Length: 178
Image 1: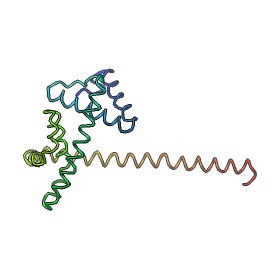
Image 2 (image 1 turned 30 degrees about the vertical axis):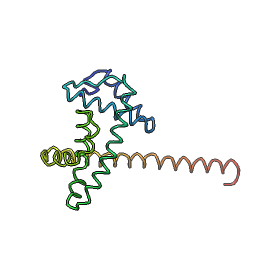
Image 3 (image 1 turned 90 degrees about the vertical axis):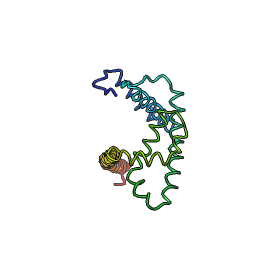
Image 4 (image 1 turned 30 degrees about the horizontal axis):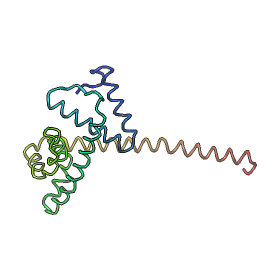
């Protein structure tokens, strides 16, 4: 996949278009998920350039299909956790299992890919190293973003409270109640 500094300004514009999509509630995430599905398909075909943003309807439908499919996969995965033995596997390797189903759907276009629980378990067991690296990367990403969101909240909350206190004191001083 081309990165903004390597792919030139066109790649940067494509990434910025994706960022703008995230501002649109619900629909934007479906558009971005559908676009990601097209990216996966291109990479599987050996083309590492980002596709153009020229199929909004197809991206919307693809993103909606992935969302519904992952919802169904999550329900089936939860049901499979009835077997107590599978609980640690699902907790540790749930992200790679979901990624397997999305990649299989991107490759085949067959919605029944999301129903293949046994295939997801097999994919994790046959490629344990890759699944473990994906899990570790996911946990690190979650940890880093949790810290960044916490710091952002603190940095916005404290100045906001100080501004509110100063505004309140100013109002009280001008009305003579201070």
